[in-house]
Image (cartoon, rainbow, N blue to C red):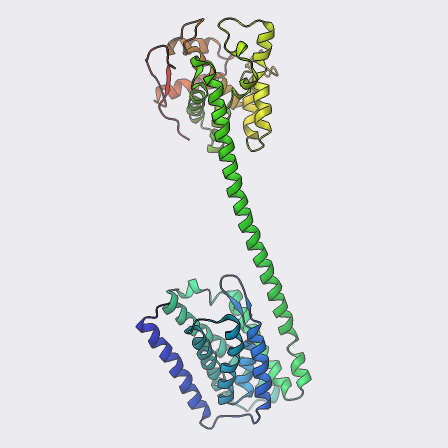
Amino acid sequence: MHLSTTAWAYWLAVIGSAAGTLAVSASGLSHGDGWGRFAILTAAASVAQFSAVKLTRKRVFHPAIVFVVAGALLLTPEQLVFMCVLQHVPEWFKHRYSWYIQPFNIANYVLAGGCAALAARAVPMSAGFGSRVALVGIVAVFVFVGVNRVLLAGMLSLGRGLSVRASGLFRGDDLALELVLAAMAIPFAAFWTFSYALAALALAPLALIHFTQRASHQLEVASETIHEQNDRLVETSQIVIERSTAALEALSATVDARDTYTAGHSRRVRDLSVAMGTQLELSSAELETLSQAALLHDIGKIAVPDGVLLKNGPLDQAEWLLMRGHPQEGARIIAKLGYLEDAVPAIRHHHERPDGQGYPDGLAGDAIPLAARIIHVADALDAMTTQRVYRDAMSLDEALEELERGSGTDFCTASILALRSALDCGLVRYDRRPRETPALLIVAAAA
């Protein structure tokens, strides 16, 4: 990481401030008389620092804060400095931080701990023992946490360009956790005077918080892993759906291509249906379902023999029964896919009629899904305007008149009105090309 001149100046200021704190602290204000407590606190802080738990959002749970604040209350300034340096050695061997990170961590603890010690000693000593210990401890806690966070905020601003808000250093939950950890040093330091056992007992909440944070971190990691796996599954599922839909579209085109007269029929019915659905103010989701159903409405014809599908003349009764089965067969094929289940009713019922004389189920009126009624009109219009061997293609006007003659009986009145509206506003345009090619050209369909 490249450090700017400003960042270097910041480093010098931190280290210089730490040195100044030590100089002031050593000038007659020192207290404490043994290196035994120094050794115990340093060992405890080293173990705690080594076992720090990394949390989400690049946060770290540092239980060593308890012992640093306790050191500010129990040790001499020089002992506190040595403690802050030594406690980071095991952590450095564990994480091997970059050279510029570990010196800052040490300087941060030295400066924050030194300021806490100075502030604690500035508290008047006139109160009773219990009140004085509580007051001194509270002052040390807030000074340590405040200095620590301010220094970290400055480092993140200079080193990573993060604002105070973006750094998250003053988030309520993080700040509260550090204040609680630092506050545990108060009973720990108070009990130390009477008994090591009592002091150790005061650390019981620290062990509980430590294991809770570790468990919480494992849950957060597991949650993130599950979210990542879900995202990959969604991506994989989307790819499968796209490829399956593409395969179905190709299959639908293959069905259309079996008859040279109906080539492109399904695509034209889809585009025309979407234009009509837009005029009927269907939602985006409904238009998507309508588009899928219209494109695949004749997919069931894959099961109809060529002799029946391509017959140049009227179908006999047996052949007609085979042909009438294609909506059910199409619905059965699409239903097996699962992800297109919303399109199944429209595919199954696109040959139903408002008067109940359609097939396969003889539904009538509003019992027929709206998407199916739209597709029925679009399908009929495209069929009537397409040239066949056994009949000529109708003009657009003739086809519209035929649709309107069947309005309310053969065809849905609302769908016919939507078709007229789509034509009038230019969503679809009649292309007067030779009769051999499809007569209806879809210009646009708003999704």
